[in-house]
Length: 417
Length: 121
Image (cartoon, rainbow over all chains, first blue to last red; front, side, top):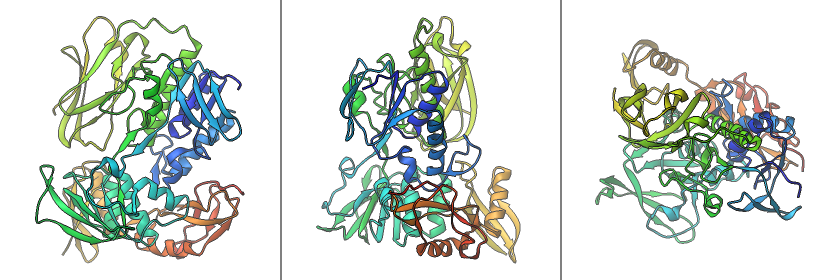
């Protein structure tokens, strides 16, 4: 197998943007490894519009957004292998993969970008009581069946979880002739965008039942019904059970970064995000192994995936070119007061360019707050936010010069606005 | 005087809006914290529009269906008419992104176009 400088694992939005940026930064030999039969990743099944407002200043569907990047990859002559499964990543960056034409092969690149995306939380991880009949799908599986394979997975549907995929599928199943009885959400607020609640539920008269969850699934061969109950303090309230006759239950209950390869390679993970712990260059604890997109932390908008992945591509190019500045000191990034995590978790001020981008999410709904960043006890950044919600990723850009010189840890926090 | 309750979709605040109408004309918009809420409410109660995205069957392609959209917004009450009109549309592969799959869908004057390439088998 011909050797390459950079292997990108995953040909979705993160892998494509990373490849384009790495090529534009001078990396000649790039190889994208993609397990599906086409590039574009999950965007191919996200046929709804609303993608790309930040990147292209127009509203695109998922396949159109993917096509913009696939076209660039082709025009730049970047190589890729489809139907190719990466089996192993070693700490020395040896990539072991296989497909039907090349068989089993190994690559020894100078750098690797992890861009494997994420996976849906399945029923087994939700502890829903009841039988295990057919008719229980994750929302993304149903999305693929309807939008790419032309199958309707059910006729009478209840959806658990009000994340954006669940909301989008409520509309999609309705347009295809199914009856969506309701969307149940465990939390007292929806994790989805307001726009999706209005345009996917309200437009079609689909009720959203907040603080409700599934307490029973009936049916032995196929789902015949489910029981919902109101939830208080994390427990179902007896006497609030409601029965729904349905043949399908869709689950939209969160996404988990897919890091089996990373873990086996010895990449240190952040327990909050489930993704690699990275520095300001999006580099993991393994030198030359970078991460971007949903494998790093679950994003809300694909535009931010593309931006982050382009940065990873540029940093990987700099690593391959070698001769980088001495690493200097490493500052830890801490989070407080409702800030759940940050990406990156460490900053080497001497390795940063002009700005350091911090992305994070909050743990609850907050109003009239201020995002503040401290270095030791000095406030180096502050911005008012009228509303913050767990469904929205926040971005902070710090001037790197404020981080240079002696000083303490960086802390990201929320304060009264 | 008629009152309509809406949720603003302009940003994550999701302001609850109350629109007062008199014979179909907007009299007041209340509950918004910024001008975007006012503009959204006025449009939403007088002439709500949506982009419709769905799929159309493909023959002889590497996929059995191709994703598509209305090229621009259509009146909200025409959503199901457009979807029904697309039920009988079948296109032979190859399909190219931007290709018109159904001109003037359901009398809206808006074309439905493919949002993806589907190659021949």
